[in-house]
Image (cartoon, rainbow, N blue to C red):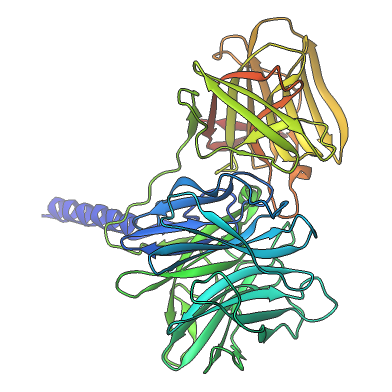
Length: 527
């Protein structure tokens, strides 16, 4: 009888563990650097996009059936809108009259000022048609949100962020087609305490209109972003700020900071807030990643998050039976006729020319804006531990190989340059060579490994199986982190556009590691 009892207990324990596994997911839901996410539902499918900043194509588009498992399917723009120069921030999706709108922030080419543009499409999966700037206001107008108040459309945005006065959230009526302002802007909310105010989301419940918004610092190692709420009995205000703010914050537990997002409603009316967060520790080096938490109303007509005001990674699944898929690796054998949607490039610093032919990538470009380091074709890392490898065909005198890329003045290049292998680091436009060696073969395999997000190892091989390290000690690369971006690994070409770099494949593999201590030495063991 005792054995039977232990057996039944064991079965119950296993079933409980399985149930727990299936009832929870772990944030982030979209891996990699996708700040300022916006999410909508069209029928039974969810769509999300986010900031692409200085990387093209512009605004990656993701789809999901369950809000937990997301797949990138394309971009809002594959071609840069003619009125823009750079800084593609904070896109906001809006579904209206069977049409999808994207209100987005970019710098205006003629003025260098960040304004808000609008584009439309008949589907989130199709290319959007740009209609140009819709909000050209002051020294900066960013972070649009659209609200439909019983048939009257409103747009709100962050204003005065570059002025010597408090930041405000401004609102204005929109035309029925959503493409033009209708009337004069008015004040919704003022940042009297000077703590920051942006990334707002509007909704109405009962007698109140609510604004859920981000406060404090968005970006970089000192980020302390968090989420606030205010309410009013009319869309135009006056708004009362909640005395219990912030309603969601990091700083403890799993996240360094979190904020700037929107809510999507499920078919049964539940509200799920997707915003971005910096993970604590090594995860910081992956950037601002989209997280998901359920939001609900309180008895006193405010809002809260189901798991409390401290943002935590583990959350209940939105739908029974949802199982989170494991983190996947990336491989491109260049067999198709176009680049996979995951690839990105540094459009402010180089025009890219990528041709896929006979299972090879021929990569080149034309540097611009005083860029001395060519064309970088990169991926968003999805783990603090990963490896990248490629096979380089040694043609031409230019530099071709692997890169870890912050921007045109902060990067690492590991490749072939003429008749030698070279590993160089560029920091604030100053170049240092860490390794160089004569090399005259027709091809070479190159690999880099990243540990803890910022510790780098570099390898070479003649057969792609036996790897030889080219360093005595690992290189630490925290300086590659930009204010609002993290480094991206990928491929690099610098040389004559008519003599492109040739690559046979590219692999990015997520690595697990553990530390082994032997005396006073610490070794990282990958498996």
